[in-house]
Length: 205
Image (cartoon, rainbow, N blue to C red; front, top):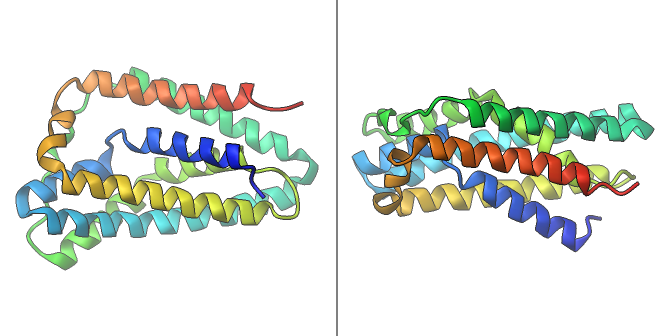
């Protein structure tokens, strides 16, 4: 199984990366401001459902890749490192975007849930990120799939809790979406680059 220090490092890295606002958070905040906390949390339910689908695809894909690559497992991990660094550079160089321009969904529980689900599912970067990020913390072996499942569940819990905090504290946190948009990009990019390089340097021969 995963060593405790590796697991705690995964939790910390996930929390740091998930706390940076993206499309899911923008929609959660928009619905919370327009319709109240209950509808913000309903949006979280929609985005969380999308995360479940993406994590399931990640675990299935990574497990198949591990079986296929066998002794070439390091290839998969280095591809993941390269992708994380590339994402970080892209985020660092991206022009600032005002996430508060996201329009809230009409006041309909079904519509709000479905839009949250679709926003998450139609963001391929989340799926690619999970595919690059999770395998970095897996030790090759017969229980690799179980390790992936543990990481996927942990990722889901951390991301859902943080998204729920955005919905609950939206009045205070909304300013973060407006102020220093370029700095937000730099922080996101720096965290991704640091995660990729840190995982690369932490590898044991």
